[in-house]
Image 1 (tube, rainbow, N blue to C red):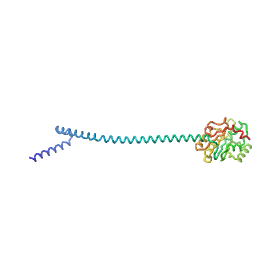
Image 2 (cartoon, rainbow, N blue to C red):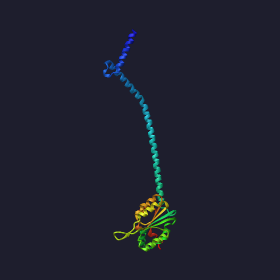
Image 3 (cartoon, rainbow, N blue to C red):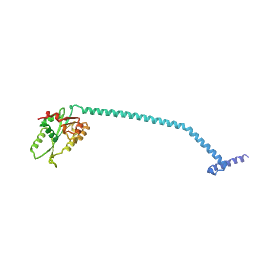
Image 4 (cartoon, rainbow, N blue to C red):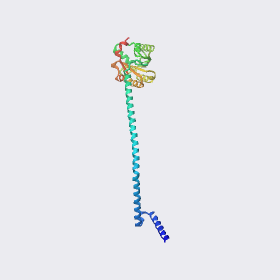
Amino acid sequence: MEKLILGGLTATTTALMVALQQPAWALPIPMLFTYSLGRRQSLEKIHQNQLQVSPAIVQQWEQSQTKVNNKVNNLEQVLMELQQGLEALHKRSTDWEAATKNATPKGRGRVAIFIDGANLYYARQELKIDIDYKKLLELLTKDGSLWKAFYYTGIDSTRSQEKNFISWLGHNGFQVITKELVKRADGTRKANLDVEMAMDIDKLASYYDTAVFVGGDGDLAYALEQVSRRGIRVEVLGLRTMTSEALINVADVYTDLGQVKEQLRR
């Protein structure tokens, strides 16, 4: 009897296992009910497990969020300190620029002089004076040491008087750069040496501490501004009515030629 009962249970169990491997729609109604009930209980158990895990996940998320907030706060603090540092650096730079702009001419170091000969010629005609070029050198190198003095001018090689003047300058402390005068359509003659002056101001900047430009052409303002950015002191001497605003603005010190004409008179 026991064997019969055990055999029946075994057969029933085997049939049920085979049936569960089939699609739900292929099961007999009683088995389908049993299958659905079991599936529902399984899903409810999974849902309960998910509910049990959720607090732990929430806690982990909150901890992660706290870490993120801390990092953001630290980053904001770093950015604030960086901004304060930049503001302090800007203030120091502004103070230094103001101090340099208003500095006295003492300690001018090596002085390089760049003279626009044509501009100085017309300026002295306007002032009705003859300039003593030795006095000019003394005035421009005061409280400093002369490195070199460059004199740029156009010449007419057929005129002996101009040759004599150029020769005299060369023997009295000036390095003269000349270019032949070119006749223009209106009959006037001119030699443009702006390029030569600008190139010399820039390429020789490592040899001098103070650049003195004698002239008024605003085309030279850019070259002077470039050396000024490299820490070189820039001074401009020119007749006010013949001097570009751009030159005056870039200069650490500007001197009106009309105010010192008596010191230069020959």
